[in-house]
Length: 134
Length: 134
DNA sequence: AAGCCTAATGAGATTCGTTATCAATAATTC
DNA sequence: GAATTATTGATAACGAATCTCATTAGGCTT
Ligand SMILES: [Mn+2]
Ligand SMILES: [Mn+2]
Ligand SMILES: [Zn+2]
Ligand SMILES: [Zn+2]
Image (cartoon, rainbow over all chains, first blue to last red; front, side, top):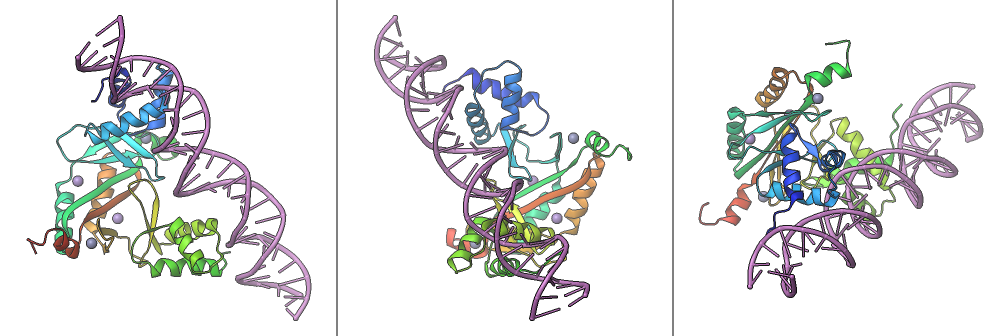
């Protein structure tokens, strides 16, 4: 049976405190900095569980790192993610949903799924990266 | 200046011979099996170059591995991929391109790029999975 | 054809994210 | 409280990708 541990709860809460996608390593690091003695393997396990249970969204960053974010369950949506700081904006786009379904149907594909993520530099990170163009 | 080597050409051709997305490692493996003494690092470098030059498409597999596929150069496009057999259809969608750019700009994000992939079951695999609904 | 310059190669080392081990711990049940 | 066993975590192990650097060879000049 599944047991409730303070470690799982700490990961759940740390995810919720963060507004963007974070890696398991950085989440572990911030937990340790905050005084928690939680182990790295436990953070990986908790995040994987949360993702399976639908309490977290996960995605592969451009360089293959797994990133996680607390997920408001229920509504399907996509994300606009800052490559630098992880700031994330939730995006709904019915037009994209319809497009994905129709393009699948046009080619005879069934049970369509889609991965739609937009990456960029958020306003703050854009200024930091190129102060000459505010 | 850029030099033409048989290694680059071997990678380009091996990519073209392959129907779907392949990893650098498996491409290197098949090249070696075919008798080529090409090195692994060279395969990685050639694939990265081909992707930059638009001659190859790349995507991150579910487990973070980079996969490559020969690409008809010139036009930016996305893919409709069969989850079962790997059959891939190239798709163009200017509306999605414009949407990705505008949604980034609306939120102050710069240097946008996007990941847009549609997965499903191709016609053949749909029939195989559910023969009662042809 | 021969030399020169240097981009490209590749075997091996290295990095780094992630997973496996396994003895110790602690959550749950009785 | 005792027993059971899921969970933890320090560490080792793994694997994809990159780096190092001595060597090779492409392209150009003479
Ligand atoms: Mn969607
Ligand atoms: Mn596109
Ligand atoms: Zn940012
Ligand atoms: Zn198929």
